Length: 125
Image 1 (cartoon, rainbow, N blue to C red):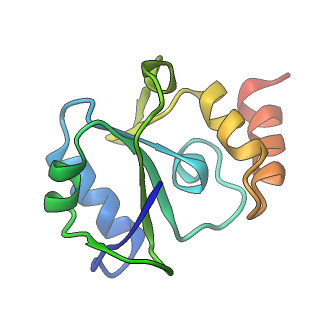
Image 2: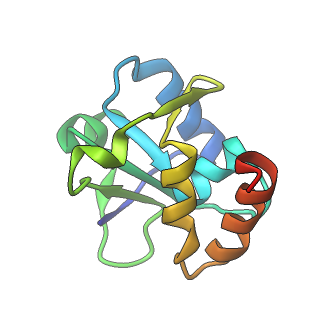
């Protein structure tokens, strides 16, 4: 996972850029960003996404690499399973609900709490 600084004023501006630019499956949001679209519960300001082409994402979102304190995190998926059954909602690409749950479950920043909310409200298990 690599951290970047995105110059957009807020995450909605970043989301709008993603809606306008990405009409292919080059990315899928996860963790707090994905959960904020699928089942909002915990407020998150960071945007984590799996990406297939890092150079395109960096260019389009005007990202600058940072050592600490980024607001966008790009993750190269270890295998294609992470992007299986990707979903679109409100013009944004998001990992499947199961992948979102798995990613959130062990995430230290209230991820377990968000994962439980997702499980109850969306997965209904």
